[in-house]
Length: 127
Image 1 (cartoon, rainbow, N blue to C red):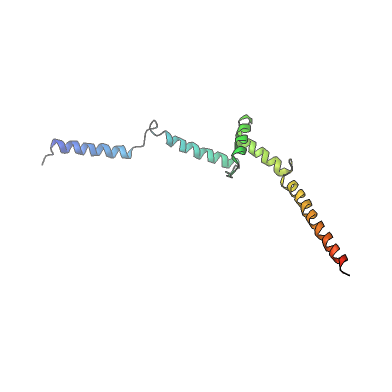
Image 2: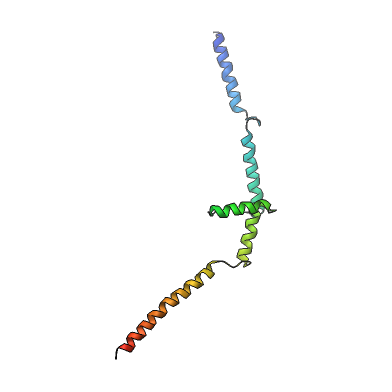
């Protein structure tokens, strides 16, 4: 039993489609595939250096200032943040939080003082 011309063309098309599926995607069409390898290499290189990804949420104004200073820094934004955090944690700069608490303590003491005076007046008034 011989195949008709249409059936031969159909079988040839199936063979070609099967070969295309089995073959890898050429580099010129799969530019994103090369980027995935670069990301893996970069992660491996960062892990070898002891670098760990760290995400946090910051105010947009602060992020703008960090990006501006990071472009001029030799290590980029990552180097700038590492340097600033190391300085702050080592005590190079005093944190602003303890200074903010001191005035609040004075206000609380000022509020307690009138209450003590009023209690003393009440005690003096009672014979």
